Length: 611
Image 1 (cartoon, helix red, strand yellow):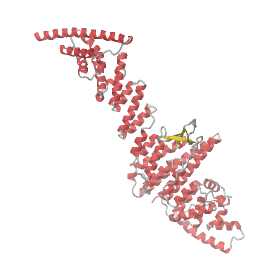
Image 2 (spheres, rainbow, N blue to C red):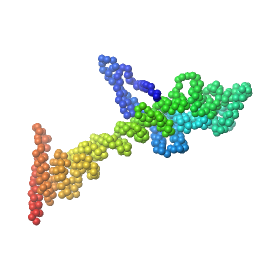
Image 3 (tube, rainbow, N blue to C red):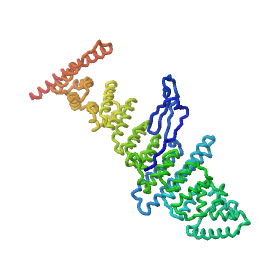
Image 4 (cartoon, helix red, strand yellow):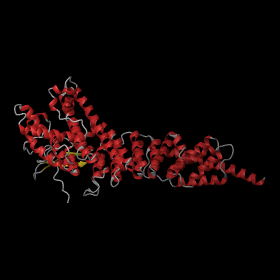
């Protein structure tokens, strides 16, 4: 049975007193809003104004740090590359490639740490310097833990090489060692340098180390028992150190930065061929001895101890609690999963540990205005819940600009996320309508395949035409193509524009036939019939007869249907009376025009029959 997590730590919000006032909150995709209500926790109390602030609690504030964004961006490429080469990772090359990936991750951490260090030096104010120093400490701890995990879990160094790796680990992370080494080796006589004996260094092969260690260990033990160095306390102390004497090492405690530095030094002189399975025992005793029995260990100590115990899950759990964001645990867990070390560890809520941590990390990225694009790939590589999570998060991205909306839309279309595509296009169409950009609105509604909204926008186009006497966005309307079949109103808009084009090209017969078909097929909205009939007037007045008798009868029927259906409700006002006068004039002109055309068409058709 797996150990259940304990209660979460309490987060105190400055200015909010939850003991006196009831709180209200609302979750967002990457943050939570918290405020006090007007209700007191005591009964029958007056409602008085509480805290006037709304507090935004972000779960991953590191995404807003400029330097750490470099970490997120560069590690994203490493992550995606690892997922893509998974099929190629076979045989002996697999381990070497995974180690290379691990080192790439560490190099990104070190690059960010170096950049942060430069900014800390350049910082003018103490607050900025303190902030950068804090971030440097966190990044340093992250690389320290990752490097140890690389040695123990990924390289899986055996006895012998294990200590050499641990020596490199200490040299890399205890900065004094590198600087002291450079000073000593750069001097004229290194053995005479004052810091020569402070370096527990080794540049020999494992075989040389074992043979020489065994030899000088026996020699040192014999000289110590014989009292050879009794007259020289310093030489005697040195002899005891070379034998790995705990008390002698602790006397030089100030030369050792921490307990794991002490651990590696102790192993070097007493157990150079330590086996991996024995590491945890030496690590725990080194911690206890170095701290002098103090029980208050730091989170970093607990993480390193868990690593030395080869308890991967505890390492991940402790890191999740101690570190300020999900970047570290998400990428380390993914890498360890590729090493086939987490296959059997499933969580209680349907996802494995790798996927859970990647989902949490990707969710944090979606809280940022640009880093969300990285989060998409992390969701893509979560086979169980990634698709669902991406759908939920992508709907909440603020579409502040059309350029950003196009990026979001491209992501959705590439993944066949039909509902999200429709939703985004509809949002953009509504924004365009509010800004009176009808062409853009129509384009988005067509892309969304939203018939109702396409009808709404088409009505706006027709209303604008009635008011202005011309169409806007002609290129779009002229090139609707099959898209005009999305709705009847859009079809009418496209066909009505085609009528105007035919008329402009003086193809009057075709224009007349199209105009009549728009009315008789009921595709034209009844409110637009008068406009269509008015458009027929110039055709009725042409020298040549355009409308046949049958067509003229159809136009007459449409006019009568339109006029007989108009009823006056209530007492008309002045504007309505004026509109009615204009309408009456149009109707009279149409009747005269239709009657004249009917006579002309009958005469023409009769003469044709007679001939």
